[in-house]
Length: 362
Ligand code: SF4
Image (cartoon, rainbow, N blue to C red):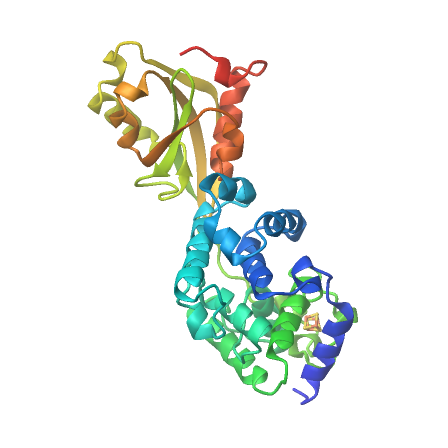
């Protein structure tokens, strides 16, 4: 590759970079929040969520002190609520152990809860100019084309090749943060997965796949994992005033907060174990409609079972499936943080479409 390709890339980046809120008003706090929030979501959804989040929690102290209810509301729709929990844990560590000052190095950021190698490298390079490589999916794709790598770039060996390449290049530039951002931006906006815009790429003269006229062959397609079908039950516990949520124990979505979930074949065993059908004044209703949900390689069909009764005298039913169970008296939808739970709630709502579920008598 020609020696001046970094300059071509950086010139293009400075002229064409998207005006993202964490770029227009740059701070370590905003870069950190944007990186954690942006995982597994689209930019169009992320930007308003980010703006609301930093308007309400404008600094690390505010984040450390935010209530669970605030965090849930601000994170609603982003999914994977464990990330929000870790983000707040990280804020508390920065306040308690770093006196509220942000760490300056990659190694130090790696000690902050929720900061893996990628997030730490972005913050260290973009905010503190450290020469450390950032390799995300966009960079992986662009490098695989630039070098026409035949390796499976998603394998450990392939990722090491990509990371070694970027690490070597970053030593040659004065502004590693801009270089990393430029590589990510190139992959996100020009060297895209479908139909890369080679005609507007600043690196055509360096790109091996372009030179060979075989861009579509890179990165090599990785074999798809076979889907596994799962049949689940979502249990919605309700007493006279409230619905109950909590942290799920074992199994599907373990550790996340929502309705308890059991495999369909385990539900009967669980119900017999607690003599559910013999409990006086308990009502168990299976909602006729089922919903579908896909997560990684699992295709799920789930039914919703509404269990109404007096939980203050029988909390062990809920505690057998959830830790930290808590009643929700209103705005349940806003308290749900996963799309799975939102679908379960929507399915339950179809059963009583024209009245508030909170007004139902058990
Ligand atoms: Fe990607 Fe095309 Fe640029 Fe090569 S020339 S890096 S394939 S956009």
